[in-house]
Length: 307
Image (cartoon, rainbow, N blue to C red; front, side):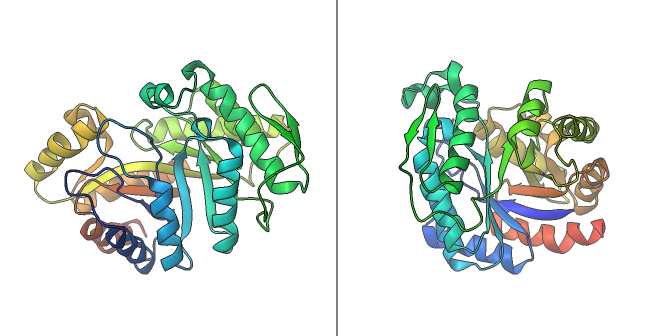
């Protein structure tokens, strides 16, 4: 299992500087994490800084760490904008981008952007096809329900035909159909799936890809948004769940204590071992607070316990 970290884009009244975020990314690379990921919201339940902006800044200060979106919402943007931004980032960073996409879960931002909520999945499907056209064809053409291309597209194109597109899904049958049909990989949600459900969905994905004539072995996965806080003090874990994660995610704190990694290093390693044994290839961790100190503690205390 490889480990990556999320950019802590959920902020309070004291918004970090860009230099703070870049230092965090540099620390993640120095500590040996394989990827740094960002989520994407135009509006959220609280202050939420723009992840793609920070990801690009971190890209310029690092050299090996993968740059992932978990998750980007293409339905809120025109595919040409997504193609230009992430195609450029991929080319300028020597193919380090993983473009994780899905449809979104917050209706308010779709209302704000004047995008019909009921169309988000159909727009996602079209967006994926249009992105691949932009990245692979000199004069792309496409006529869909939502998007039309008549030979023009952003240039220069990425050198490898574009970043791999991994699709986020909580594991529903319809979602897994989409992942198998359109994705280069699957991103599961760290606080919406168990090891048992992941294992079942991963086996189902292999079967679905085989039925489509696709090699089930040439497929990637990641478990994203694994909120964590390493502490030997149970009261501290409860306080973080109650005062920080609960309000930010609009989730019951007691539920978060059972879903997130909240506790000492041995407890966190034991829970992650269950996901590793279920087939998770990459775990992308999100520090609930004290971000730099927490990713260092995880690297030093938890990863060695997982071999």
